[in-house]
Image (cartoon, rainbow, N blue to C red; front, top):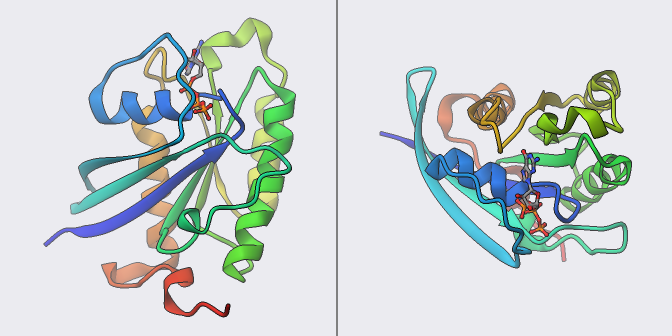
Length: 184
Ligand SMILES: Nc1nc2c(ncn2[C@@H]2O[C@H](COP(=O)(O)OP(=O)(O)OP(=O)(O)O)[C@@H](O)[C@H]2O)c(=O)[nH]1
């Protein structure tokens, strides 16, 4: 029997959320940029001897003024929060988005991997690896740097997310926190 896992991918516009998901699910990289409204991808993965039916939710990019869509919190097991290593602004957005999720779900922490994307753009890097690591540590999250373009660490992003989910909800049954009880 396989376990269902819903993973939401959030972050500023144009950091490469769709590219990361498409590279993971179809092994392709698309150079052109089409802003996402919302789409869902499916992939079955075997990780640590368990089959996971992953539903990966690609979101429209957020900014500091966007209100968290309840669809991106309710029923979600884990989060991938993406910034681009070549955009300081997108890095600053991570804590803002993280705090919005925490507030919405009414929890103190969430299964989460913070992802520095576009590492192939090393020459225009604005965010050091240590800064990413530090941010992740302070939020009890995992951290990975990746390139969808060169297929570096792409599978690792999603496997790390599955592992963060397992750490908090072992034995494959648990419902995500925000599905159990909603106070309107
Ligand atoms: N150099 C490089 N460019 C990338 C990489 N990933 C994505 N891009 C480019 O960055 C642009 C935006 O990528 P998307 O995947 O559409 O970004 P997004 O975060 O889904 O954007 P929104 O839908 O607006 O939120 C596109 O032109 C991609 O080709 C990468 O790893 N390296």
